[in-house]
Amino acid sequence: MRNGAQEGQTSASRSKDAAATILEGRSLSKVFPGVIALDDVSIAFKAGEVHGLVGENGAGKSTLLKVLSGIYGHDRGEILFEGQPRRFSVPADAVKLGIDVIPQELSLALGLSAAENIMMGIQPASRTGRVQWRSVNRQARAVAETVRLDADVRRKAETLSPAQQRLVMIARALARKARVLIMDEPTVALTETEVEALKAVVRDLKRSGVTVIYVSHRLDEILELTDRVTVMKDGKWVGTHPTSAVDKAMLVEQIVGRRLGEQFPERTAPRADAPLLRVRDLCGGRVRDVSFDLYPGEILGLAGLVGSGRTEIVRMLFGADSKESGEIEIAGQKRRISNPRQAIEMGLALLPEDRRGQGAVVDMSIAANVTLPVIRKFAVRGLGLVREKHERRTVMDRIKRLNVSTPTATRALKLLSGGNQQKALIAKWELTEAKVLIFDEPTAGVDVGAKQEIFALIARLAREGAGIIVISSELEEVVGLSHRVLVMREGRCVGELRDEGISDAAILGLCYETSEAGGGGAGQAGGQAPEASGKVAAGR
Image (cartoon, rainbow, N blue to C red):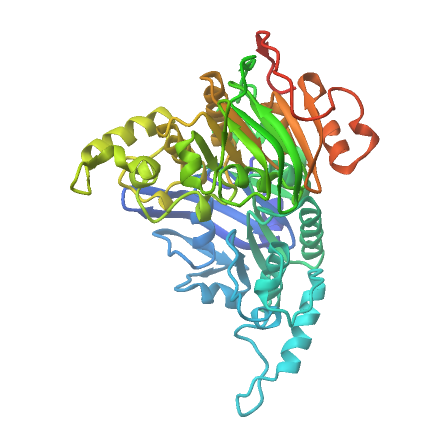
């Protein structure tokens, strides 16, 4: 069967589908030096549908979308828009036809107003060329209302929330008469409320006849929002299905090319030793009077809504933010941590929520990133030089152990997929021999296969005696990984859950202060040593 064709179609049904197709790629191929990024991919998008596109990092999704939107040229195959062959020299060619992209990374002129961003390049002007600002604001406001943007369009873009900035980008595409809108991981870094609002906008776009190509690693969103879903792997088309005919397990199997076992690994119980980390009455910013202990081999989940204070706690522990008061003990000794360097020296490690902005220097090599905290180990004494062969050999040993997909340690970190970047950063902290590792949103922007590998790495580090703190907005990750969970609300720890008491309902009950929080292990944080009794079952 030819790529992209549907089995069992009659000639009449094919003709009907072709009439409904607005954008199509036929046998598209794209080759980069040493890499076949797209391999004979055929795909069709219908007018007015929401079409999901899923696959692991490196599956070819981004390359396909860049070809369809004119960012990349293609080496073989053809692109059809409304049945007519097209070839784009620059992205503006695609925009003129009505194909627009909302990238994962926000791309606005932050110093300009929302209205200026929305109307950029199409501002109404007088005969003399003078911009008519009243018309700019009026037209921008009208488009903003169609995407439910509840901010004054005269405000500078930099003052808007990430969700509002994304809506400005959608409004800009609609102002340019977009008929096909490509949305790449649109809900990353949004709160639950903002995600629901964006879903409503996607449904509005569909009702208005706009075709939405929706790219996301969040399969629940794909199943909820889309009409059809296409799976890609290794640069190839795997299948296109009506969303109503698939479930999460089927999609995962096609994405990774194999059946996945239990998503979360089996974990040994933590040790009933003295705590590795003891925090008492921590205060700073919105955080008030937070106390807890962390034991060797324990995975401690920090749960709560966005803005509850989870990230603020770990940034103070790591010295990235200053605390106002409170005590921190590491291995039984009181410590004053004023900066990340001191934290590293005391055996703490942090993989921050903003991996690319705060956790790595993405333009540097993998080797340089992995050895950054311990570069002195590879320096030639007295000369200020790095023993590069020794550095590369050490790094390659580490990243092979963590299954980082790269041919060489000298490759720039930014060229790796999100999952491989995260595994490389875990290798960095392993090299420091940290005993307390903090993972803030460890699987953000990571595909399902890499997620399992990261979960396994976290479990292994715990088995080897490290204390782990995990923050995740994905409740199933907190439930599936943690021995104990501390729930934060408005800067305070409002409860502790453990063992069979850990569940989505119990966590949400504490987050929202409902009756669901009662019983099943809720209690005061700070506590008692966990019981060391054999195995803890994965995926409660």
